[in-house]
Length: 288
Image (tube, rainbow, N blue to C red; front, side, top):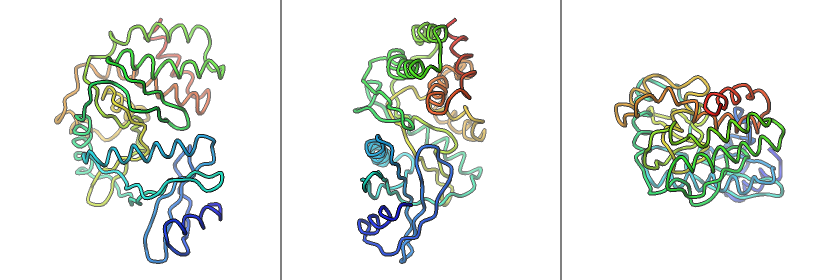
């Protein structure tokens, strides 16, 4: 951690001699575990990207919204701001534990209850981020228009601008966007985490699940379930517990990749052509 940032955090947190340990696992931010002389621990994210101040402020806002609903644990937001070119977010440190059977059962149940938080329209009060990419959240009355206009279209345009997709793939994308109502069952808008992969939850003390790194909005709850399956999936007990608490509509597995397309487009735009084949296959499947 940059010395100036560490000294600034010592002053703002009113602690002396913070020790810092770099924490791996993230692709977007630098992360550190901080310890104070009196035994307190903090988790700090920092970033010098031009969007970092806004990005981390939006993350702090989302964590506070989640905490207010009290359906699933999130780390407490302690401090956010910037020091010179570095934006930072200081959070309560939640020590990870090994997931147990009880953890997976509770996680499925608590996510189902989280998804029962509703509003009348799809979207969010403001635009936010997924990674360092802006996530558009204009309000829509229906999921098909929201998913097409606020999720798929911006990422397809981004991929076009970065010369990652060609004319044929973009045409398939347009065709797919016109078919969303045929692909996805109608449901009221649910509060979703927005980026629910295995790196964005923690098994904490006494098997308490916690969510981190949200990219939230009110959307189709199947988005979270689809993302959870994209990189190998969670323990089967998680899905069994979720299903028992808030049953999915039939044939979710047949349309799961339609939701995963958004996340694969994000990864294509953030990390490059390693995700190209999967994106093209889904676009061709639904938009040919």
